Image 1 (tube, rainbow, N blue to C red):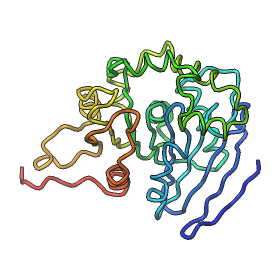
Image 2: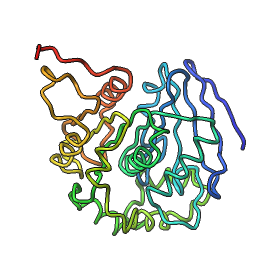
Image 3: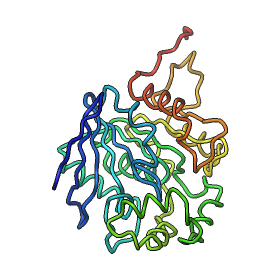
Image 4: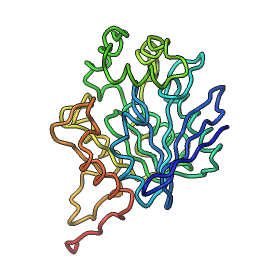
Length: 280
């Protein structure tokens, strides 16, 4: 592994590659302090595109670890389909490489699916969980986004920031169509998590969704209910799992309202739920 450290006016940033499951997995470590926060981006994105505007705020007073998934950003690809289980295995390898026994997790879309897998299958590694714009079961999705990804070709994204970022960062810039094809089959054959799986998550969970997201709002509410939310907090106290709905927000721009996202995420990570304010 080669590690490089750059210092900005406020904090140091360490970058490196971890040898994980036959790949060189790119990662960055920003800031210091507290329980490390692990950032997991969505499909066709990378650290910079997904979290670039959020990182300076999220890493203020805490350590933040961000990584590029298999075939994304600066991480190379391997002869393996893209699945939440496979990517979660990569993440566990990265955490072990960095010596991190437990982290907070913030995942968007595919990254949220990976976060869910970690919380359900590796609960000891996740202190708190933030899952954004992701369903726990396919029936929670509207479907149009999945269909669009299934039909995506390099020509369709020519000239976009995603194409430019891939070609400038990837160790194999000529394999963009391979990535698009793998994304079109993401988690193929996986039927989703059961209600009991979701109920059994030990980590307090923040669910975020756009009000015009690919994830149905009623599904996000069901997600919250399974996590112990949707109660009268004045009488019962604020549950440890919560829901944030960002207005005027689509799936593609799910984290674009930086101030709202930072406030929701950092408040959830740093604040204990409020007790009941009305005597029972």
